Amino acid sequence: MVPKEIQNLAATWKQTGQENIDKQLEAAGLGWAKRKIAVNLSTTVTFSFPDDDTFYVDFVTKVMSKKEKFSISKVTKHKNFLDEDVESELFVEDGHLVMVTKGGSPGEIRTVRIVEGDKLTIKTTVVKKNVTGIRTFERQK
Image 1 (tube, rainbow, N blue to C red):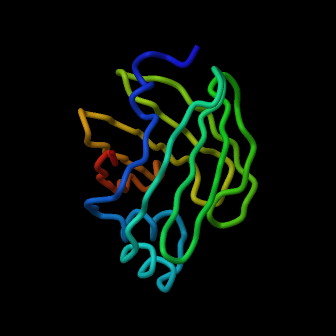
Image 2: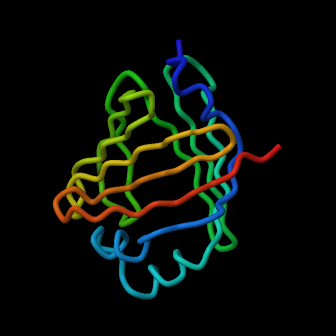
């Protein structure tokens, strides 16, 4: 069963703000032009749990969209935004869904998704450079 603490992630979320995203993307190895585009795009993301072991992510911007599926109970192999082979592990920590991605050139990336009412905060940290970017979202009705 999907842990009760994270079931409230299942929704569509529209980005309302961001902090330090350019620096976080730079630390992760994204080039200047792609960073500038990414910083200026508003994201809509839908999270769902189609079964007890799957976390599904569907995000859309004006220039791209991507769908990803992650296992909740084991490591998931996939490609990162630099098209490198990586592995991600999901777990619940302090009531929040945490994803740790390893294997790509940026090194370990830790993403924490925090839901408070109808607000979602996603904190992404490039661990070896200790740089965190924060995106905030509002639940769509």
